[in-house]
Picture 1 (cartoon, rainbow, N blue to C red):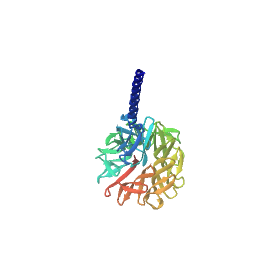
Picture 2 (cartoon, rainbow, N blue to C red):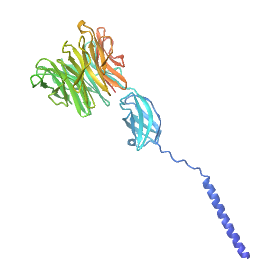
Picture 3 (cartoon, rainbow, N blue to C red):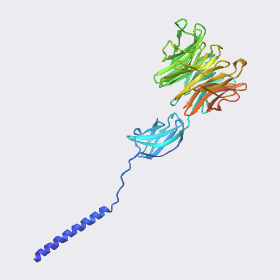
Length: 441
């Protein structure tokens, strides 16, 4: 019996020790801190700046960004931004042309998207024209009011186009007393005219540069259309003779949209009247724009979706006075009556369902009244100046209306642009200048 008790005691002691060891082991495990689950959610905590211009560098701060640059997709107002660099907590991007005065910053990685809130976008305003030196005019454009001169020879600009970082401007330059059509890309000149000529309009898609203007060929100033420097003379079918003719005239508007390039202008018929024409992708003979009276001019074109708008003028059938006109898909809307005034539409821009047309009107033609810069929104006129003036271009950016113009300042003409009816003087106050076209990026 004594032996059995000793065995029992030994077994009990061993069992107690094991239980005690297990207890302390469990207690030690329970004392370890419980780690929270890792937060892998994509987050934006701040932006380096909320007032931005095209080309600025924006830093997006946050968490769980990809360190692989290409995995981070950033947009501002729905426009893709180029990502420069990326860490887990900061992504740097180049601000694109936002297309509006504000927009939301978003970053996406895989299936996750995070918002950085809205920014204020300050656009760049470009106005093309010329600035006189006191001896002759020089091709000049103004960026945000600052002049950029493109030539040291007599020259002028008629049109301007912005394609990403590239600034294209079209016009003429006179060398050795020969006036030639040219365009400048970032200040580098390309001459496209061979004979006396000038470029009136420019539009760019990708690497293709389209221009419209005129050139004297065999003694006649003919409408010309250039694609990448290769020129084509625009001719049309004479409605009286039912034959193709080439008449004196000019290509005054070019607009590239998607895969289509529309060119418009005017030319003289066999009867001596001026007819407006339009051609697409350089296909000739051009089409006569319908619904017009004699002596009608097409000065500018704008494409919005499937709709084509052409701005110009046509004569009042009774008085013979010019009436500012806009054609939508060939159907004309007359903006002025032509009873006692002369008016011409020089530019057209479409924003949503609103049609904006810029131009000028001599309100009291029979008494030699002054000509005033105006624009029409959906047919309703807005008079920009009470000084003799002409509106030459129009563009809408967000809710803001921009109009280029020149205005008489006593004996000289001064380049200006208007934003929502408020003028900004561009040219020197003591030397003649002119604003011929405007674009906002």
